[in-house]
Amino acid sequence: MSARPDFHLDVYQNEYLPEGGREVNAVVTVSAEAGSGPAVAAAPTVAAAEVIIVDCSGSMGFARDKMRAAKQAASVAVDTLRDGVLFAVVAGNHEATMVYPKGSQLVVANAQTKAFARGAIGGVQPGGGTAIGQWLTMANRLFAGHQNTIKHAILLTDGRNEHEQPADLDRAISQSEGQFVCDCRGVGAEWEVSELRRIASALLGSVDIVADPAGLVADFEAMTATAMGKAVADVALRLWTPQGATVKFVKQVSPSMADLTDRKVVSGPQSADYPTGSWGTESRDYHVCVEVNPAGVGDVMLAGRVSLVLAVPDGPGEVLGQGLVKATWTDDAVLSTRINPEVAHYTGQAELADVIQEGLEARKVGDLDTATAKLGRAVALATETGNTDTAKLLSKVVDVDDPVTGTVRLKSKVAEVDAMTLDTRSTKTSRVRKS
Image 1 (cartoon, rainbow, N blue to C red):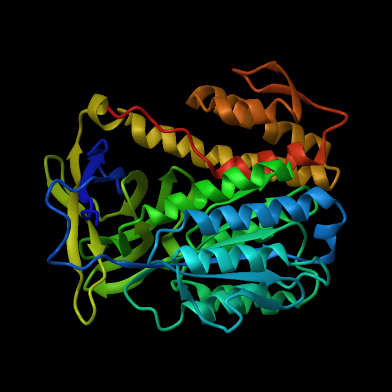
Image 2: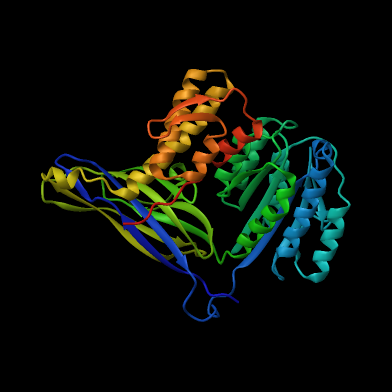
């Protein structure tokens, strides 16, 4: 039994505003470190549940290695589950079919059930279409009724959602939101990045491409191991602001970009909760932007109180950590114009994600001037913020003449998988060195 992590919040900002200034920005780092106390005996271990969804549509059989690798990956994911975790394996095509167990329920992981699951996975054959909304609905049905449980799903597809109406997928995503976390993976180059990104964003998971099916086993093992490392479920970032203030946005900015602004749930007077999902031993950064009523020179205001709150049945929640966002008005231009490095870094990272996606979309529709301008700006931002991984991905789509100014030329031939990899990973950020 592992101890619940110890949580700590650090706030990074330039609290000084010019006379009349209204906008307050802060980067909040939430760190969950291995618990220093004994294994949590007073609070029972949080239960965990895992649903593994593997695309078994006809296209998965076009390349023999794709289906074989997917089945191997699902089997490895099953083996990675801790004993005692609830789990199920689902085959997805134009419907959702239980692979193991045969009934629409979860079973407890142990040596015997894992062996049965591996055997059932080995017998799966590709066929049919793709209706991802039905897959999500099945996962939601399996997770239903398991309260106070860390619920996680892996969803793998190689194609687009072509065998149900867009409204069907929208409804499935909406019904699944807040019910479980879902990490999405696309294998090959025939799936739609925006489709999986929308699912992963709504369900607080990750999205990535596995260009070569041979990479599925390692990826599934890593995702499952990460899920097994979660120790706290249903955690929210609670933001209190003073009367008259407006929350402009709340975004996760590391390890990846995720806008939480529209996900808020009012939790009290001038207070709202923004979901962050489940936590293990890890660290994440959030960018909070609040607009306040200006005060006089020399005045100090508490512009926001940020708390990490664990959901408690029939209660206001347990506060796991807290940080303060301040505003001080000054007529000293040196103080008020000082750029906070954390805020500047993640502002650049947010713009980087936007211009990459805009540039790739312009390239797709043949607007080469806009594509060149946007991807050139992306190269400059990646260079400026030290995001070397993104810079390498950009170099497969554009020829770079000057990385500092962002002077680039679109490559005449780009492998579709390279463009999709850049798009998929555009929201992954490089972390700033804290001041």
